[in-house]
Every structure is written in C-alpha cells, then in structure tokens.
Image 1 (cartoon, protein in one colour):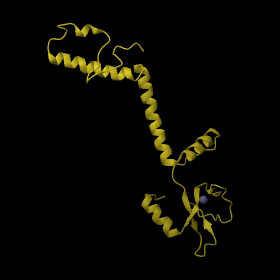
Image 2: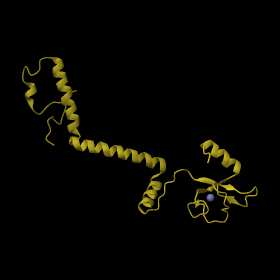
Image 3: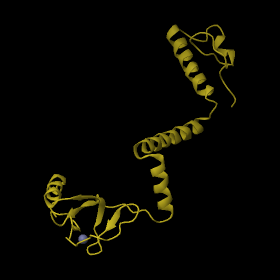
Image 4: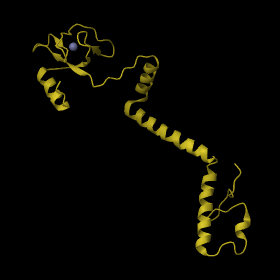
Length: 164
Ligand SMILES: [Zn+2]
C-alpha cells in the first residue's frame, strides 16, 4: 500500500507524508484545520490495517460469518456440527418439519409402546444407535428415547397447539 499518512504519530493527530498542509495560510481558521486533522487521523487508522478498502469489506463479511459460525458451535457443539455437515455431504441428513414425538406407553404395565400418531404397537422394533424410530405403519418420526403416557402426550399436544 502506498501510504498517504506517516506511520508514526506524535500527539492526538496523524500527519500526511505530503507536507503541503504545512504551508502558511493553507487553512482559513481553526475549524477547517481541525476537520482536516481529524480526517487525516482517521485515514491513518485505516492505513494502519494494511488492507485496501475492498479487502476490509471482505474481511468484515468473513468476520461476521465466522462470528455466526462460532455462535452455532457454542450452541450445538462443534463435534455435532461437524457430524451434521458430514451427514449432509453423504446425503444422510434429514430436517424434519416438526420435532419428533415421544413413544406412548400402550398399557399401565409398560409392556407395550405405541406410535403417538397412529397407535401402532412398536414394542420390540430395533431403534438403532441414535434411538430414532420411524413408524412402519404411518411414517411418523419418533423420539424413542422418551416414552410418555397418553395423558402426558395429550397435555404436550395442547401446549404445542397441536390439534391434529
Ligand atoms: Zn404410526
């Protein structure tokens, strides 16, 4: 970068390499001089970055993206995000329209558990490592880590405003 300002600064204001401003009568009054000095000082701050204006815009854009990504990593965990990205690349990632519903106990003795959507008995169906289950009868995605009573499921549906 071909700097217009001196790298070093003594006092509150930066100075230009071009000394034309120092000519007697260059400024009519103090306000004019002050405005010039303030502008030169801000120019020095920009030049101290060592970047061209377009590079700064690109840097800010990337910084905002990185900040957003850091927030997601903090929220979800970087391992979880990496796992999701890898699953997406491999075509294994699915985003559901609504949260998975828990299984429902089919009886008071917990000898059966049923689909919250269609009531199909799902007891004995292998869930896999992620405990994700899709009902073979109606296709509903189910959170197989949870199992609730019919009353709890009805209460949750009311709270969620789900009147299906
Ligand atoms: Zn079902």
